[in-house]
Image (spheres, rainbow, N blue to C red):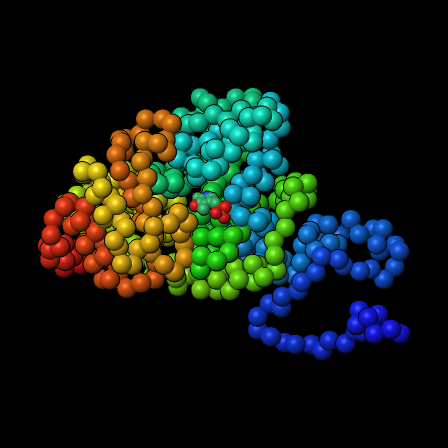
Length: 401
Ligand SMILES: *Cc1c(COP(=O)(O)O)cnc(C)c1O
């Protein structure tokens, strides 16, 4: 045998390696011992392994973990949270169907409804996130799917998931819930009757700002198979290494989220007393308009909330955010580091909102010590108000604790 052939055909018997962690298998091609097995490989599509794109052991382990957390029968991974949203849309909707979207939905998902679904003859219809039972008036023969996101992106509007589910099911429509904010630890959408529980695992679950991954969880095999078929049509796949990183992140999800959510709520409470702040949007705050829904339906909170700012001179927002020592300006969240993301709220919404217009800053709290984050925010707000760096904010902090 020539040496180049030998390189390719030498096999070393593998011994069992009883590691505590999930072993990472790389592989696109899988090989079969018999002609019959090869020709029948499609029978393994939903459960076994037939080709690397259609599943591998690390993905299977992660899917099983997410399914258990979501209280789901099956979970399917997607290459990003956005890919998971698109997967649900394309698995459920057909030409002529309508889909209802809350105005508070994740921005790129709202945009894709127009750029991807509309040209396919699927009609997206926006509804106000505050609608609960009243959504029944918007349903009819043509609405096949209703999206829910709680709380909403940037505006943090809560939605009455059970009321929307009841109305949708009565009208023959399915409901998909994007529950990324609270993670499956804080919100089990399937328990509330939703048909699809979507997560951007890129956020808290992977948790270290280094993975893009999404998941869709369902309560029955038939829905899972429709999703899996569509996932194959789209050529979706997830890398074993990314699945491994996500599993590693999942192991510490509960402690990270507990700590981050606690810091976030304390800081949100403190910020509501600060001059320059017009309002703090966080459903776990008792005076938030969505608080009773949050209390009823959620078992925990995320660490992302928003603040509405009092108007200020041009340039003050940049002075506030660009000079922060710990908070970085960035769009994604759920990792170890604290972030801020400014937005013109009115530009994000197509419908009138009780939150009005003006500057909004979304704040994502990481694992830094809360006191250091508060000092950074206090100094930033001082700059926003155009005052000298004062001690006043810190004094209020002592009172809030
Ligand atoms: C980030 C996010 C997504 C998209 O996740 P990606 O993995 O970044 O594509 C979807 N929904 C919500 C609520 C998000 O915050």
